[in-house]
Image (tube, rainbow over all chains, first blue to last red; front, side):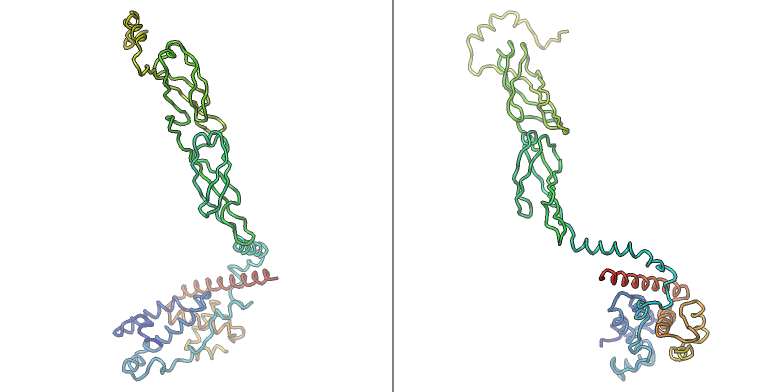
Length: 303
Length: 84
């Protein structure tokens, strides 16, 4: 048995009133009938009651302080000897208390409750596994064409992921039952794969539209012609109109990035006239003799 | 146990005890207390004398305690049904 002052949490110099207050606040929390669901409450309550019996009574406290009686040797009033509490009887059946109000009608709905509790217990025993999350980067070409990808999930399992054609950035793929295993008969969780479409460095991208600079020769610029230009998934043939200038933007409809719903944005080809690297005497001689060319000032606004 | 016996043993005046019975805190069929009634009367005594709970407080506490035990009983019945 520990010191009764320690049990009640009061100083040895505490007044009788302080001791009574300390006991009351502990007893309110620990009285077994105010804690019907706590089996340890009775033992704790006995301890504080025993301590209070001793130092809560000024006469006994004096004798205890003087060492005339110890914690064990004191007499205890009969009502604290192995008493039974109301809670020991209250659960056992028709006692005349409670019942008529509150949850008196509880039993009428027990079919529903029984079902609820049964499902609850079953759900706990057979709960489904957790979903696994993963981020998967795909190239722009893969996003357009779709395809297969093999990935290693955080748990170490290997998954083959089918990427649908035309997928867009941020889309979530759900692979049913590829997450962590469930408990009991619980189904496994899903693998959730968030798609990140990686930009294609050859293009500048704005939304689902792509832009690319393509070099053309003077000859192509003057006479026009067909050239092959890259797209995200390959190359296509494109017609350059005669008399094209640098900076002219030509549209390749539907060759941009996926925009959802099976549609694609456009690719824009921006022409850039490039002169031959080596000096070309014939070209220089022509330009020297090209009078109307010398007279043309492209910086003048013409209507 | 008779009311007189309880009164003597636990130091509760007969008038107070009758008040408890009137308030339906304690049942005393034909002037006697069953074990459960003694236990309940002692709970009332603890609350009023040791814990300093006033009449209203005792009323509320008993009402809530009754509901907890009714729930316990209902749960026990359900558990019993689930075992079958």
